[in-house]
Each structure stands twice: as structure tokens, then as C-alpha cells.
Length: 269
Image (tube, rainbow, N blue to C red):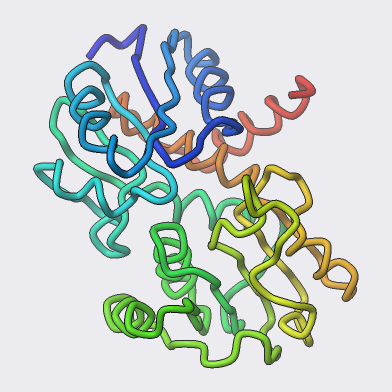
């Protein structure tokens, strides 16, 4: 892999509005590395052919909704957090190794916004790749995590694998923090929320991994209940930073990640 140029990509169901390309180009540009970047919005029936092209022609790529688990069968190994949470969001093509930078990106986003999680009761909505990564990161940080997914069998399976509790009534309230990892509220579901206002009773924070729109229906409902809100824009930047470190076999630094994000914002992006 060339150290002065990378060929990267993002694959998901619909990545037309993703900021990943901007983030990767900015981060790598700050390190003096040029980046060729391609976005793959693919249907399930086209996933196999897209994966074969990615693994054959690219240095690395990121994976988003809904393929963070489907990618497993194409890889030779799963590393670190990806193994623990059962979801891959970063792939190195030369070794066919899968990683997950969602968890570290999520926790750095919370830290940067002064959201404390240790000892807090937190509801995570969604048990797909993003939900699993988030639940594991929060659990490891000392939070009391409850996970919710409408499909009860899949919910029980995820909770057993991750070692967290299942939420039986996500609308019941009583959580310190409510996190939306479902994807409901973007693309064709824009304007919708996975929960109603009762879910935010007693909550101090509502966090939505969605960043487009900037204020989802989920966050608007929470804000109307006097709950502090946070969207996932900085998380995406931070997970991109950690992914770029993996692509380059570079040591990651929390301070460097924060400094780069501040610089990105200062540019008015």
C-alpha cells in the first residue's frame, strides 16, 4: 500500500448523503496523503459483486448500514472490537482483516460533549452493527445498558452475545440517556422517530447516530422534552480518523483526533 496515496470507499444501502468522503480526504490531506474515494450504494442482490470489486481494487473501505455483519464471510480475520460486537465497519483489503472503529468514535464523541456514562442507565435502540458496537462500548465504560429491537428473537440473541439486558418497554422512560442506532429518521424514513416522547421521561441526554438531517425527529422530540441532544457527526469523523490510522498502520491519538476535528470545523465544513 502506498503511503502517499490511498484508494478507499464506503459501502452501504444508501450512502449518497454520507460525509465519509469529506472526512477521509480532510484527515489524510492533513497527513500529506491523497485519497481516491468512491461511494457504493448497493442493494442486497448486488452486495457480492460490490464486495469482490472492493477487495480486488481498493486499499481499504468502510461499511455502514445494513452490511456490517454481511461482510464477515468475505474476510480472513476479525480483530478487536469487531469480534466483540459482531460488526465490522473497516476493512483492510491486502490482509482481508475486519475492524470496528464505531465504538471508539462513539465514546470520543460523548467525551468531547461532556456526556458521562459510567453508572448511567442507557437505552440503545437498534441491535444491528451500530447498535451492537454502541452497546459494547457503553458496557465497557461502566454503563448499565438495555438494548431494544422489535424482533424479539434477534433481540434475545444480541443481548446474550453482548452481555447486556433487553428492554421490554423502550417507551417507558426512566433512562439517563437514550441512543438511537436504528437508522429510523434518515433517507426514506426522514421525519420519523423510533420512539415517542414518553421514552425520554427522566432522560438527561438523547444521542442519535444520524447526522443528516442535523436534527432528526428523534432529537426534536427529545429537545421538546427539555433533554439535551447530540447527533452523530463528530462520531463519524472520529471513526474515520481511527479507520485511517488502521489503513496506514499509524498509532492513534485522542488528542490528535480532537485537534483534527476542531480544525475541520474551523474551516466551516
